[in-house]
Image 1 (cartoon, one colour):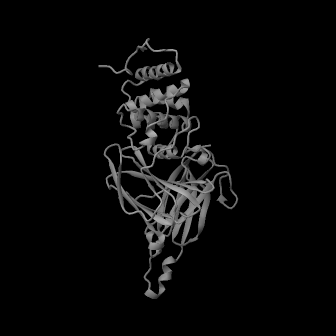
Image 2: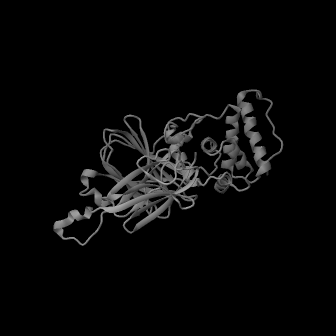
Image 3: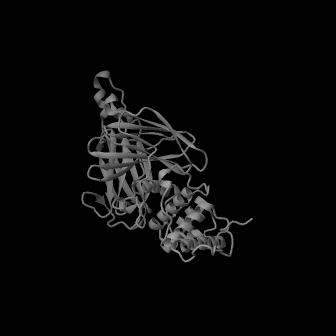
Amino acid sequence: VYYSNEKEVLYMNARNDVSSDLMLSVVAHEFQHMLHWNMDPDEESWINEGCAEYAMYLYGYPDPIVIFNMYPDNDLTMWDSGFSDYIQSYLFIMYLYENYGGAETIKALVAEPRNSIEGIEQTLFNISSSVSFNDIFSDWVIANYLDDTTCYNGQYGYTNIELPVFETSRSYSRYPIEKTSASVSPWAADYIWMNNGTPQIFNFDGNENGRFNVDVIKIDTSEQITIDKVILDDRQSGKYEMTDFDDRIKYVVFAVSNQESFGIGTYSYSTALLTDVNNSENLIREFSLSQNYPNPFNPSTTIKYSIPAVERDLSRSDRSELKSALQVTLKIYDILGREVTTLVNEQQQTGTYKVEWNTSLHDGQVSSIKNPVSGIYFYKLSAGNFIETKKMLLLK
């Protein structure tokens, strides 16, 4: 038994007008299947169909972007032949095309013998990109909701297509939010929308056996966009403090994605008003260093980290010492281990901090390497006995 995408001959029904834009676009779609079968006969359907939808875009008559935007909780890698599957596969391939090498990357993907996620990661490796499928998927989830190329170097939108509004799974305008249980399919997303804000803490608790990613999209009243991340621990739990969630913020969206290949991801969330917390600083119980955003980046990226309260043997009358500062340094190194710049070198109290590294600016930064070139860099946080290093990618 052969499917239509596993043949060397293409048949068109002559009872239809085969010269119409629709039918010729379908021809482009089916030609891609034949090319793909010739290069990689056992490719997963979601990749194959996504490339075929991309061929329709190249012809100039793509399928309309409908249905998927209404039901984004749809497994990207599970092909059920519904129209929503065609559209989400198309959007993912288009996102890959626009952000990671253009048509040459898609050609390489068609010819790559590895399949599905493994094929995409091998294709990225072949074009010298160190970004992972998980990273691309997380950014794609944000791009689908935001579709704005004016911020973060165009990382969270589409240049060649315009998306309709994506539906949210829950919307809130009254707080606090009581504990709510939810679920999301593998390689799919939920969007939790909040407005009419008041400073509060967002609590997330995912299934311990799962692998979640929770990104934060904030739009202020001047339409300024901020992308942040909820840092999850090994138990897939985390908190996000929204001290600025007031009349300055138009709305906030939490994009929850399930990055496991099998099994429904169950999770719960709630909020607590900051006025209901006796001491919000006590919520920071451990050091944390977040992945920089955006990543890859050009020319600037933001690094977020948290410093907990310093615990000492104190008398009850001297609890203020819990706020004693630590010496904190945040340094950037190149792939050879050479120090590029020092972003932070000072005493800091407990709290959460954000630091920008702008590779085009050097004033006020201790820098031994001017005008960093494209490549992998490392950022290292040192605070007391805590040391952690993460890598990032600069693309110029």
